[in-house]
Length: 328
Figure (cartoon, one colour):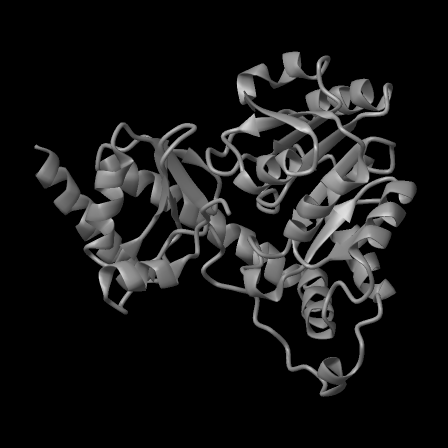
């Protein structure tokens, strides 16, 4: 399987320490406070909750949405809904997209963001993360909608993974996902910091959502996940406060890296930069109990998420200072 952040057991096994500061996954370090759950949430089979779907449509601005067990479930299922097709996947990108399109008889190729527009004409499906994970690159909303129209005209799809869009929805196309051929993926794992809940949503035309639901089968999302997700999606006050906190944290992390000679890009949840020898930086941080995301190829670089508290910020700053000394 492709490598991912959040693999802290690997860090513990490789470096034989337990005092880890995990900055590898790009999640909100101050997760949504999970409400107390009724006992029958664990007892009943989890029927689809219409109130959850309505809350998701309101929060994401989408005409209709299907709840899934994390957007990973949809990423794995969507390739099974098409006959052999020509697939263009943005590069660099969340590795699971290309991995699963390649496994189901499709011809998948990786396309740099700068080449995506020209790849539309020669593709049946274009997959793009917006904002991109790990670089934070963005494709303007109007351009995405033009691509969607061009692909749909010949029965194609535009799949837009908006997992990191919650802090800035400027270029989201979820509100236009009622048109054939446009599929939008959203997650509660990143902004809400609830990756362990395994809850995501797919916005698309009704016929495609019906096909996807049939492919995924019954009881996709657990009862506890549905209740927790609904509470988070409806809590507008928490969402407003969190956007302010994350904006400040993203700016602080960018400034901290810049102060140590690292020019980064990204979102309010993570920063990324290309590096000629990222393994050395990753090793340096790991030896100090700081777990960051290493990208070994396509392109090579490092991604760092937000520290959770002042102690963690101080620890990261100290490790960066030591890194600079070692490079002199």
